[in-house]
Amino acid sequence: MTHAATLAADPGQGDFTLRSSPLAPEAQPLIEDLIREYDARYGTTFDPAGARAEVFRYPPEAFAPPSGDFLLIRRAGETIAGGAFMRYDDDTAELKRIWTRGDLRKQGLARRIVVALEESAAALGYTRLYLTTGYLQPEAEGLYVSLGYRRLFDPAIDRALYRTLPFEKHIGAKAGQPGTTPLKEPAATPEEATERVRAAKAEHAAKIAAFVRNEAAE
Image (cartoon, one colour):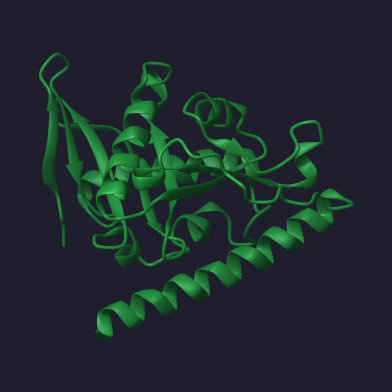
C-alpha cells in the first residue's frame, strides 16, 4: 500500500516532496539504487547477505508517522531523491536511506531532503538527530558536516577502524545546542570493527522491530 502525499512543491523545478513508504512503487528507484551502490562499495561487509538485507533490515512501518517518516522528491514523474528517519529513542530520530539519483548529484537535492527530514522530525517532537554513514562515503560525511552535524568519531583516525561513522545534531526545541555524546571508540583492527558493527546492527534491528510491534498492539 502506498502512503504518498504531497507535502511541498518547488515551482521553479517542477519538484514535489512526497511522504511515501519503502514499499511504494515510487520509492523503488531509491531502494534499488541504494542496493546497487552499497553492494558496489561494501559488498558483504555489513551483512553476509549483502546490501538488500541491509536495506530491508528494518520494518517499513518504522518509517511512518508518528515515529518516523519517508520522503521523496519527484520531478517530471520520476523519483530523483529521498530519505527517511525512524525512532532511535524518546528524544532522537535516526536518519536513514539518504539518496540522490546519480546523474543529479551535487545539485543540492540531498541537502533539501535532509532539511525536510529535520523539519518533519522536529514537528513530531524529536530534539536530536542521529545517523551513521559508511566509512567509504566521504561525500556523505561532507554533507552532514556542512549541515552542522557533529562527528561522533575522531576524523584523525583511520575510518576503517570504525566502519560506520556516527553523527548527531540537535533540532526542534534544542536546535543550536552543542552535542555532548562521547565519541565512538575505534576498534583495534578493521575486522574487529566489522564485528562490532554487525552486532550493533542486529541489536538495533531487534529493538526497532519490538518497538514497531508494540506500537501496532496499542
